[in-house]
Length: 517
Ligand code: SF4
Ligand code: SF3
Image (cartoon, helix red, strand yellow):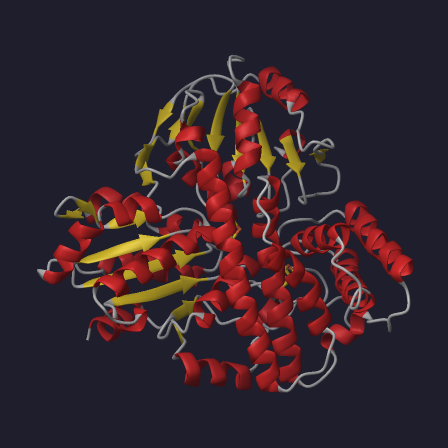
């Protein structure tokens, strides 16, 4: 009898499922609570079926789904609280047939696969919806879909019915990413190509990681004039592209690389770290006391900062802590990185790109994007970019870029267009879609006819929702790695291969040769 079952991320045990303890550090208690949360949400969605949309329930769905994303929350206390809140809502609305945690894994392999795909995708979208909502952006269709999707996840469907539902979800997630793009660009301006310092300066500091730009904005405001520097980490790097965030001189640079290196990079640091979303890893004793979490993130015993009624977060105790720790006593200068190539910046030079394609100076465009992770097989992405011919452009996004963003200078440019263009965080897959659609218009063809190939890396559920959006747009011939999701059954994979030519990555040499043939 296994103590838990979770197979939602790429590092799942043995490529099948974590049954005794999560490879990520998730304990059975937390995994089982997350299943209870998911089952209770399905019961609540059933109970709400005929009632008018309930804002409170929509927010609850969103936050609870977000909380279940890999590497977000490992603390049974807030997770139990969340479960009880949902159960109280179920009791308030009453009358629905109870959906039980074991029902999540009930049915044949393909049904479990399809149900899990939908639920995991929704977890990813919930994170994006959360970021949009705190910036005041809401799309009723997106928010109402949490209830619709959860209710549907508890229903029976044919395989075709499940696939239709998953494709519908992909389109809703596209709307959600658009909403977040609007929220970010309206709040902080359109990203502009920006050079980002790496290494660090003398003095006290806060490192901010995760994906939440509003947390960064509040942190920058509250550290202003206090002699405390702020560094981005992981998925926060693209913040430098936004004029309204980059205008603060004490936003000094980017520290470290992608999430899986944090235990090494944060070891013994003389400053504090704020986690705004995933990915938090089991902290080492050498830095655990310097950590803070906020929003849906949690780790047992790590200090948590809540927003007040108006959304304001008081970071003063954390900033004071950073001052007391004293910060770095020396300076280290690393090679700069470039970011800020969002859709506005890329489409701003669209004429140049189009001409270079027409003149044969750009033969192919690759989107090499997605999550990073600990697996050795992820060197594929470094090798792929290193070996990509000089007449190819590489768009990238999300934390997988740390596999090759240090190669920026070496990769060079084509007629002044840098060959490597960092479009931003994972949700900025929206930017890549905008660019692809615009290019298809200019060349009067479909996106699949463009000299463009998507080479994706996945780890957690945000990558799942993005993949579903790309499939729902009919994008074919994508490569996915480093391994295929354990929750995709062989029969479901067959459908994806037949319908969309989705392929697992092979070797960089073989894939490049195939794509450029
Ligand atoms: Fe295992 Fe991933 Fe689930 Fe963690 S999130 S328990 S590593 S499958
Ligand atoms: Fe990375 Fe955790 Fe997915 Fe936003 S920070 S992409 S893994």
